[in-house]
Image (tube, rainbow, N blue to C red; front, top):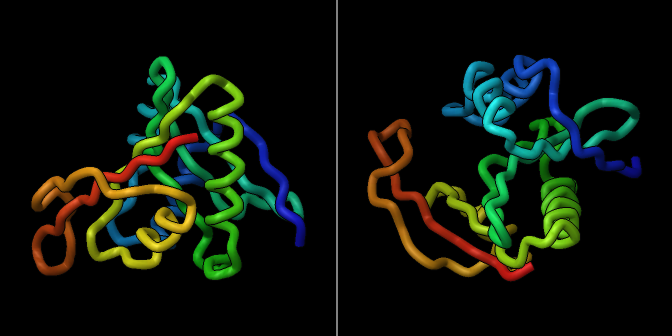
Length: 147
């Protein structure tokens, strides 16, 4: 399976919310995706066999971009698709003039933090008790990379 990438404005935000609900317990709702589309955020989709395998949502202001969300369909996780999607969207953002990419990640998400570190992201701060979790709240780790 060779994935291909497509930057798109999704018409069916419910599909994105449903994919994310399979991937994590506290994902965005369809309404949040609709708001994101209205705000002009960029959607980067990863497809294989004409099916959406994952996507990312970014916003860019001047020469800085922020990764707002990245999701890989659970049945395709662990196969390097997240790394491929992150590389592709970083290249797309750099080509459009972005020089730095920021993100936040759950402190307890060791897999994601390892992925980001492998792609040159470094921790630059924390937000205490930012994310809801089963035990109450957990910190957000702030990270950035030069594109």
